[in-house]
Image (tube, rainbow, N blue to C red):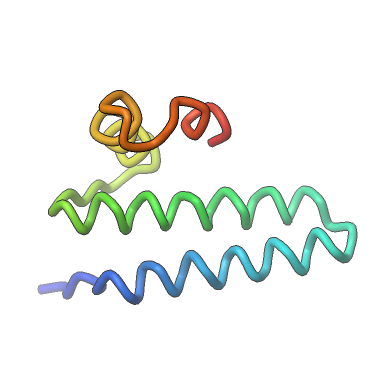
Length: 84
């Protein structure tokens, strides 16, 4: 039986990815910076969904659920999903 991460672990992972994205950007590693920034956002979306008892196995499912439950309902602005 696997144990699920807690919300603090998910947020910490997102913060680590964002920190790495900033370092990569500062060092001119733009492709890597974009990738790490994407994962920072992805992990934060995962955390929001996890907080609402939703866990998905793919990026597409995670993004789709976030869009359905938080973008289309107006909790987050429409522009947010376009950035992802």
